[in-house]
Length: 225
Image 1 (cartoon, rainbow, N blue to C red):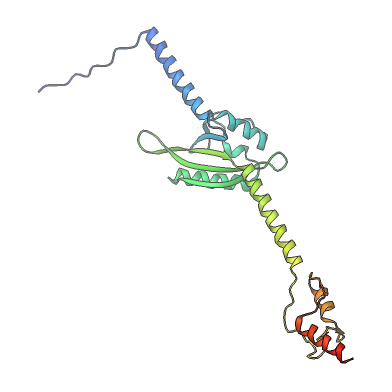
Image 2: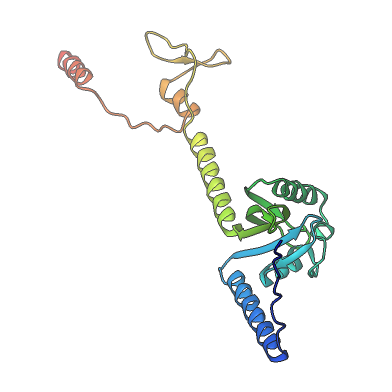
């Protein structure tokens, strides 16, 4: 019966180990630069206990700005989110990603006494070599300016609607009008000229003239006189 002999790789020399360490350092630096490069996009990753395993420098700056917290690898992110509602919201999103879901959400985070900002957050599970979920990644885009612009537009539209509604007063319901003199009966049972009534209940203004029929009739009356 033959046996197979496993040949172990030859150990690296001290110089080779240094070169391999330098190559790994360069790879990590390249990866870090890639993560830092997109303008306005922030990256971080967590393990299954919500502890940081990596983050972009911009994320650390953001956590300092909106929570006043200094983070490092191993910090539990939930511990630095001081707002209870924000913490519950973040945990629910993390748990969904850790269960295998991919999420895209627009959310607001931050200490109200420091800075509240709007974010577009992409949550994804992070798998190890065996295909087991070992954590999650989050790509974050600051959409505060976009949300503020949208809120300003919505407010302007609402102000315009209110303004138009106040200007476009409409006469509604059945209006009691005299079939002879065309005066209109008010709520206090008094009678008011048609022009005065409409002006009081709308923004309409009147410019008086004379129609052809009335002109002919008035001319005939003047001729008879």
